[in-house]
Image (tube, rainbow, N blue to C red; front, side, top):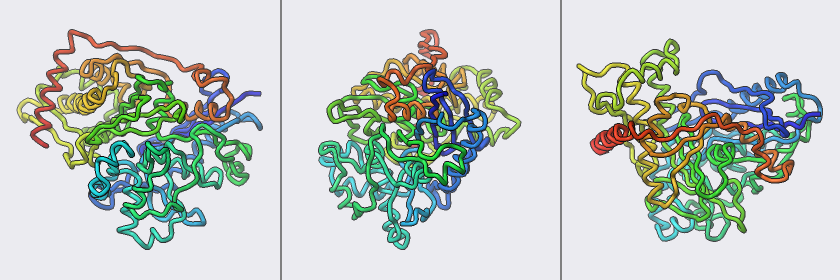
Length: 496
């Protein structure tokens, strides 16, 4: 009999599910839905919402597909892990019915509320205790609902992060994690407890907070009704949950101080591990509890996030060619223009306010556009270089915090499939890049095995993790890409 692990990754673009062989680390079956990006609704300017029921429908469809592909037998599935888009807010009543659409990570409506809380609580409390400004995170979004939708707030039984919601649908139990509470800026790091000061500032009742479980642990079990729906055994334990960026780090075996992981999906991120609870005084990058954190052996994740990454690339695709213009074709056309796109600079900040811009509405824009010189190829190249430049801007902030940025690991997916993007990333940032054959759903499956206690050590969970290639900076290209970054910085100053 096989020993199999199931991992879910609930993103804002798609839902992915993977069945992994726990003993070999090899993928048995995988599915991602929908085949085009999931819709993000924007009822008002700077809002971003999704229906949690949509996530669940794709979870069900993905699970049925991989159960069939894997020819799953009774008793083979040992544990389930869940990765999810961070910072979202899901609200349910006592019957576990969703009260309003989820307010997701790139929604900017609560920026002012977070800024007011930072002023009220003061930097002397927020930075050493919360390691962040309350900003536009989950706690501020919950306060927004209290202020603007009191009739809904009164009905709230519990609030959850997106992954907590999926775990609830699977098991019927409402739980969260300390890692999740930290990403929502509910966590007091000095006291290792929920921040009473923040709750008081926002007038949030502690009864709305779910009970917590460790990220790696037997947390709950699949209910009989859901098991019948999905085609799996009842009682399969849910043994892991984590936000997508801590989970991406896990999927790449980035668990020790000094290690770095990066992604370039809808948003672009760099995630570094530190044993110390460090913070940026301006909260342009953010510190959370990492998945392997223990009080006796602390571990923190420092997250740089650029909202406008893959979403900008997909927008450009729709504008320039839609379905007729594939991503490989876009990469080819972009490479036909020289480094720097003849001075064209793309500022990619058009997917909500950006933390590295201190939550100011910079927006997305093309700078230095010359109508007699620039064409679609220049735009395609400037798109990729502009995204890398935004990540480089964040890299500089992380360096100032004392993080060692020498080697970065990434999954061979999304924008890292582009040779041009990889070249720009390595040379503009002066880092080595290692690409692995993995994704968030595989990481969630490995996390489930760790949480179940299946592996003798965490290191054993990464059997079968294959490095595809490594890239080093090319000194013949470095100067040119540094020039691209300088041009981009000048353009940024104009729009700021």
